Length: 210
Ligand SMILES: Cc1cc2nc3c(=O)[nH]c(=O)nc-3n(C[C@H](O)[C@H](O)[C@H](O)COP(=O)(O)O)c2cc1C
Image 1 (cartoon, rainbow, N blue to C red):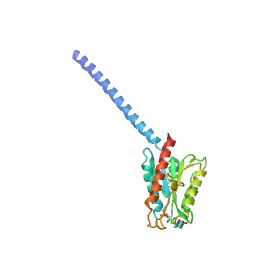
Image 2: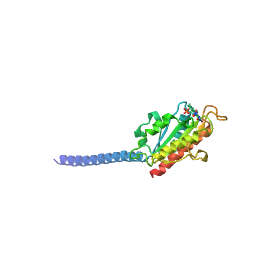
Image 3: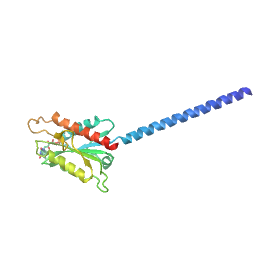
Image 4: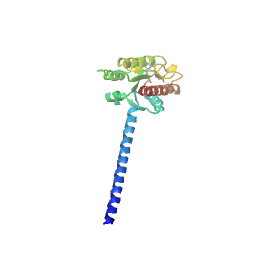
């Protein structure tokens, strides 16, 4: 009889300890999921999007992505415009958008894409925006194209910014068709402007999130 009492006393104590340990484990588990989730929520997302036929504007986009990725605590994404949904635009804290120069203008596909951005209620207001462009020749359109993109962003109420060098004040641009830059690929000089733009937008997005 005494043996049974000792056993049931020991068992109930053991049982209570197990339940309390299990409760602590569950609490720690859910707390860690919640803190990871809210940390991820706080990381600003940077959408880098572009139109590119022969790959030059894509190469600039990749340099921008590299620059943005070098900043910790942001989530950069890179996508051609064909793969960008309205939800992607709404989810982004910053949008960096690029076009090739076509007859000193943005490409028609780029204009069409920008015209499809949601405007009612101005849901893009206060997102960060920046531009980039590639062209064939020096000063026959890149600057105008970047300003066209920035002007469109301003209509949406976005806060626009340029690159980190004075030579990239309107954004990152490069040429591939005029000497000495006619190798057919973007010169490292232009890619560095891209990296600088990506870094600057990412750092600014982080500051805005604070
Ligand atoms: C229809 C057309 C018009 C162009 N017009 C210009 C122009 O006015 N100025 C310029 O610098 N380059 C011009 N270019 C050259 C492109 O802008 C340049 O090759 C650009 O890097 C292409 O980008 P992508 O490789 O991303 O398609 C033109 C190219 C095409 C196909």
